[in-house]
Amino acid sequence: MPLVAAMKAWLETQLTHIPPRGGLADAIRYALTRWSDLSRFLDDGRIELDTNTVERAIRPITLGRKKTPVRRIRSRGCALGDHPLPYHHGKA
Image (cartoon, rainbow, N blue to C red):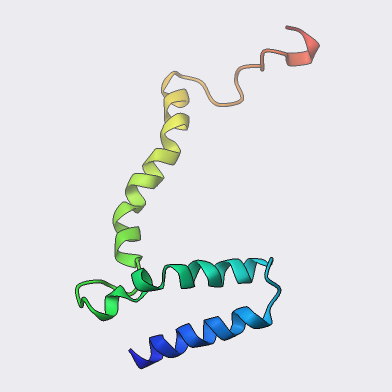
């Protein structure tokens, strides 16, 4: 708990020393506005500090979603480059 409190104080200090419209300032403000959610793991031991477990669990779902359009095209017996575009060589 003391480390997390020190980190919050450090982020607040850093925010006063960096340009306010930069990406780093946006990231610090994002963290500070959600601080109660970010530090919830201190009060509830069931909450993990990182999301690695969740990311590993959903990875097969997201990978399958990315491959779906290619699988549909290949299942029709053609590859992506087999058919000309509608305006191939300037013809409609």
